[in-house]
Image (cartoon, rainbow over all chains, first blue to last red):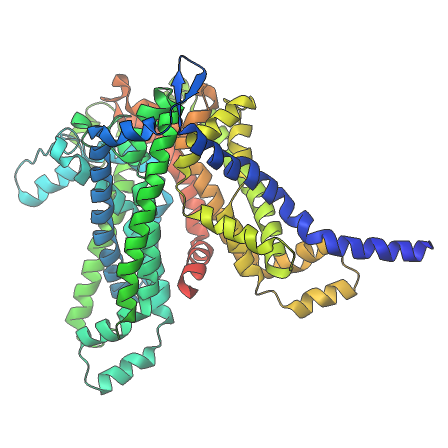
Length: 304
Length: 280
């Protein structure tokens, strides 16, 4: 073979092989550190840890035990309740903020956007650390501010009163995420054709009518997106409450979430099989809620 | 959508937004103020004590650096977040390029598989991945964070989406000019999706900087901790309950540098975050 033909062959070879070479690093890691652990985790959930190392097959025992444990159900109710409350407040609040900020007569819009968005840069762990102090009974910012507003000393035990544990978590989580949601709505609002509003005004539509018939349909895909990802994220709630309550599940375990249950009763206690079973229950739960979410949110889209 | 030109409403709107922005920002201000106060001032003055700069102190910062390996935590966090970012941006852009611009057998099943894993909560593989990392000897080792962390299905899809917009004619022209496929990716495709590279770099960095659960499992020595893990251990210690200024000083060190960088680049970050979602 002549050197020229050889070179041509090589050239064609690199063109043919290129896509495989390009995806192969990802595919190898994907298989080794995601697909394989997934498979292993399914197997692991059918095993019990005996002693320190040995694992024996236990069938569905882990799941049966899990479904009978009232702590697990408490964690489920707590987490699902949190997720619903979070979405029902975050999304309307983010939309409202975006609509206000989208008005052309607001000065310093980018400054406002910055102020609202900046909280999103702080990770859940740091928010936990900050809010552990802000919600402190005596020196905390929230009680101090409430005292100043009401003109009398307010001493609400945000972090030690079990009934207030989840509302405190919600408060911190909302501070972290409303501005984040707003940014998406703002981008969608800017893509809505302004002429539509003028046409609606000519047709005699009021402000409410404009909002209902133009703005909301125009940003509905953001609602769909934010509910789905917000739901998945909220169901995995862990570090914010865990750190907010000084590495615990809060007063009387009132802030126990599913992932916290997994972490404490599965990982920390060394029962990896049990932890895996909890993980798969979380998968089932999230899938179920995601399907429900899809039905509800999609139905709205079909309306005019 | 609000049309009326009534100046009173305009004023009211500004006041309302100003109040809300204050609520959003005030916790930051409060944290910064707490980090420069000590002793009774921490409990008697909400923000800064009267008396000007003389009453403020850097003692909290000095104490946390001396009593805890804070400097190591800063170095560790910076190292892990930047290494992770470089790896994941290179791998995702290379893989995303292949998924966007080539047709090859196995591409569809691969993408379906990737999509299926995207909605799974990461915690489901926590126990099995931990076992695996332990067997590889990567517990208490940064490989245990960086190698599994290099898999980003989200990043792959993000880059695939962005690189579909690179004109085919441009790629064909580069090939005619004798560019190898690798150079097509590096010299043609990557520059075309520069905004995406920027936004994803920021997101990946921030994600690792703030990540807690997995590093908390993998890292065992206090000197190997990252900032969120190290600081969170302080919150459960009795000795810092009364002196919360120390913890606040650590928090300022953790969030201030990223805050400054990200606020400078916020336009890119927000555009990158929202393009995929808003175009839907």
